[in-house]
Image (cartoon, rainbow, N blue to C red; front, side, top):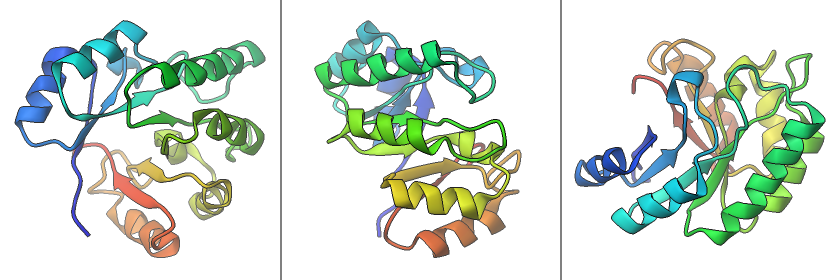
Length: 181
């Protein structure tokens, strides 16, 4: 299995630098200081025009927690549909319930809207109450990739959990370490 390098970034210059530095793809976001939000359609197209690198587009209406109102979820659905108008490689999102579980119903809806693009569940996973229960839910839903720091501040600190998640997921899902890798 070859190691793929994905860089989280928010602009054309950063995407060009990531491509020159050997990244395989980028996770394109806006508002990185808020944990990343949906990039503008113009930004997606500009990064595509300037690079030949894979683009995973974030779908997140705001920073903060991962509990979304009905209107925020509506925006996420609309943004996910709009991604089909762009030359991207996949979408990235994450939704939770107040009890710390994966919001299964809404996640399933976004996956349906995103297909045939690959889907990555982002670091909302690191806020779940039970990582193995959450992983099982994501596997059941057919999520392609999981972005996690192993529920720690950095991937290095979370490596024991990341290793366990990888063993449990096997070939069914790609587990991608995140944060200070």
